[in-house]
Length: 298
Image 1 (cartoon, rainbow, N blue to C red):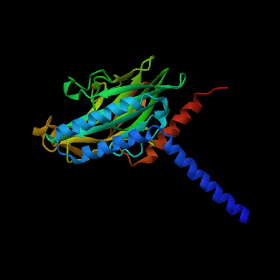
Image 2: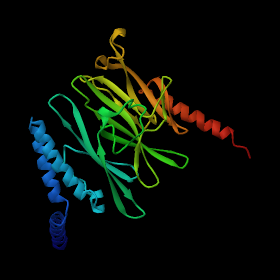
Image 3: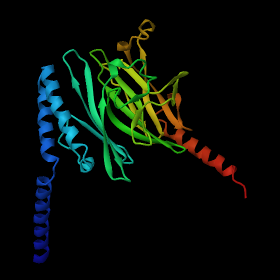
């Protein structure tokens, strides 16, 4: 019994020593601490010029450390004001954040870290928000250098044939009157360069390269991926009065749901779906399974 207790104590001491050693020898801890302090200042000041100055310090520091391959798996867990999201296949990570200015507008910043597993190296792509300059954002093909800025909270992997692309769900504060949620598509060229936008959406006979929902900034819009239904599910938006059509500050959820199902390389629109009827999905799967069985001959 005494030997067991001693072993537990020794194991605990070794674990503590290893943790302290790891923290002291982690080259990203100190710059992370600096970045955190700058984010803290940005979150409390009302001076826009000061926000931009400290944001420049954050960008310069990230530019220096995110090019290192070892940084890819560093969590930056203390940076509560920055989003960190990694793709399910661990091919890339997005780190991004926003600044809110006194006039109610938002500006977005961030990086894509692309991990080349064969060469075991990271390629870094800064994200430059050009939202205000993008004409027809639903139809635009974009890059990291002219990016429609947003905070991403979900990455969905979609495959068709030999192509792999990533569907991103994001949020944009936009302005004092409206918020935006969007469905973005990200894919990489053979050389590993990121591209945004793909002509795979069709809603109400309108083809588009990304889906943008603009709505009243006091409303809450559900936009999520439902694993059970295997769809992107979102609340349908509409204005309270017909005379307000096209004035998005009056658009609010109308308690109905639409869905986008990925099939044969495209997102198929389903209007007025019942997100609560799980049995409907089971019946459809059972019917598809039966059809497959009937098509098999021996």
